[in-house]
Length: 348
Image (tube, rainbow, N blue to C red):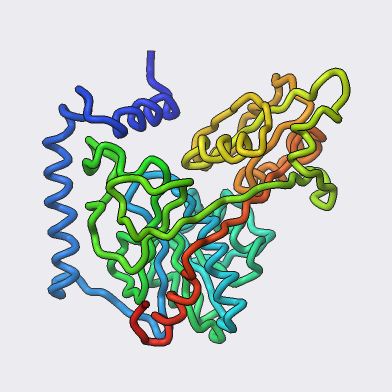
């Protein structure tokens, strides 16, 4: 029987969280990957490979742990913080699944299959210019050409794309920490967890060893749900956890096609919701309807999944689907520290 992509991903994730037999088998390959990664970075540092700077400051938001650590909610928070500080930010992104190599401008009406689901979500939430492209430098230049008033660029992911010069690097971790601490393919790390960066953000309830002890805490809060068929219709999620539902409780399913679905489920359980889990592959395209045979009164989905579901009749007309918008809250005065760096002053 052939292994499906979702099964392979599940096996790798379990492997990467401990140093078991499969991880040890793959360990020699991770040493080679570490050497190649270090050489590539060294080539950029000594100028054998060229780093190109654009006329405005660039803030890169990324991770060294493969998969979702909360980059998109953080990028939305960062853009909104810059806007409140008087900056005019723009965003560049790889655009996972985008259909074109050339830079492409993203609007709230763009199709996820053309530009990626996360860039559309960022454009919808922040109302700032967003450009996607495989080559970050080309995307940044195209963004500035289309919107010359932009005075700071946020790169959603792209930590390892050294061709684009950057002024601030922000690395995110979550409760998985560094997994087994090894690099690909024996572990989950794209680079050494000790790589330099300006700020470390921890998307978890508590610090996780061996992530930097000065990591700034991020909390993701989702306390309301919006009906997909009419996003103006809202309900408090806590109301679903009360006895006011009547004699027969509602059957709730929570679905998430994100890098770390467990994070979405944990957040919902934090407000005492009882539900069945439906983890989906990251960037799930909903070509098939996973809810067709689901017996549920309410199906909670992420905003990232709603970007795609809202364009498909089978989903956008399903009254069971409710979207849970998530907002990032950041501890530690990070806004002020980033603004100090942008102003050319050292952080406190």
